[in-house]
Length: 163
Image (cartoon, rainbow, N blue to C red; front, side, top):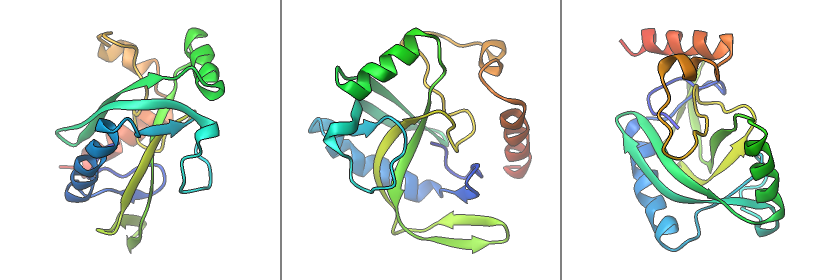
């Protein structure tokens, strides 16, 4: 997740809102309840029968929210593991509830936002929100292999808007 950046859903998460929710999410992490699913369901409830991974760490690094997940030995976790072993680049996306306020073509996430979880997805709304293998340093050249032309254009556009 990234704050103060327009995502592909037309939303911007203000830093204060995202930082607060990451801080609140630490309780779920410490209690081993920071579970996520394979794909984004329509529900705001994480269904145990669909859990694929657990979040072990989540922290803000500047405007970026970064974290560590562990793939679980569940049916959905086995799907993720198989995809990873096949070399599939997986995205990660936050799931939450709350309101937005429209400003031009952009939806600003409001203070009532509540982070539910992080799900593994094929196409994350946040530019560059892809899972990287543990301990692997990724060069800019290698990272660009994982982005579509649209992702790169979005990143350039967002860089320009952040000036």
